[in-house]
Each structure stands twice: as structure tokens, then as C-alpha cells.
Image 1 (cartoon, helix red, strand yellow):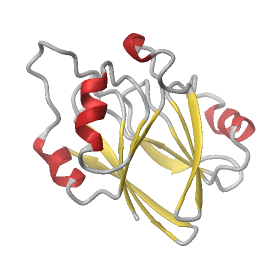
Image 2 (tube, rainbow, N blue to C red; image 1 turned 90 degrees about the vertical axis):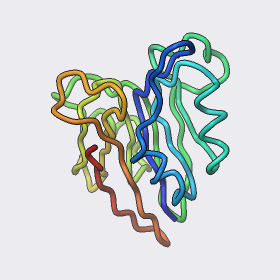
Image 3 (tube, rainbow, N blue to C red; image 1 turned 120 degrees about the vertical axis):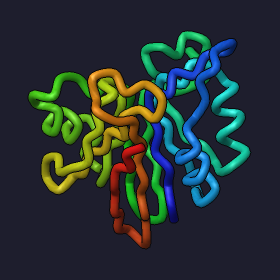
Image 4 (tube, rainbow, N blue to C red; image 1 turned 60 degrees about the vertical axis):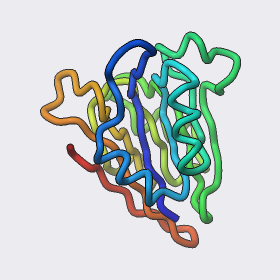
Length: 161
């Protein structure tokens, strides 16, 4: 199973911002889409759902989606327990906090900082922040994440655009 992982897209109505072509190419191969918040409007979720099922959590800029999206989410994808949250807090202590909050998750997907990260957490847990494909802020490049899940195993990677 291939999962496309997004966060912090910040696509607002009336702006010319859209997802980059590299994201659309990855969407064409996605079996599922995970969005770790700061979606802003339903328009993007509707568009994404035309490619594959979407699982999303509420971000701090998702005012129009309050009450429609959960603040955190835990799901199983091809035998892998995945947790999602927008804001994982400060870098210091993040691995410990995410393991305490989601002790059964093999992978925690988060966003908010726009700083891509793909690496180990506590007790064998993986952490993935896909960065942002549209708003890089202090990062050198835009980015998103990909997951390959297979019978309880997961391989994650960041894609820089």
C-alpha cells in the first residue's frame, strides 16, 4: 500500500496557490492519503478524495473545519498502526511525548513546523513530518512524504521538490 503524506498545504480560496505537479504525480499512485493538518478548507480534501481515501486531522489554521476533523487520529494501514496529530510540540522531548501519547503506534505523522523529518522516535516508533509542499517557510525546499506499507512493515521517505 502506498500512502501520500501531506501537511501544511494552506490552500485558501481566492489564492492562486495549488499543489505542485510532483504532488499530483504522487497522488496518481497513492492508495491512501494522510493529511496532518492546516488544510484550511474542504475544497482541498474534496480534491484529494478524488484520488484515494483521505484521513486528516485538524490543524491550527483549520478554523472552517472545526467539528469536522479530529485533533488526532489512530488507524491501521496494511497491518501498521499509524497515529496522526498536527502539532507535536517542541523538538526537545518530541519522541518521548509522541510515544507516551500514542504507545501502540508504529508511526506518528505530524506537521505544524513545516520542517520535514523522517526518523526514529522512542521504543522503535517512527516519526514523520512531511514538511509542506506549498509553504516552505525557513526550509530550503518544499516537501511531502511517502509511505510504503506491507503486511505490518513500513518504509517512509521524504520527497523534496
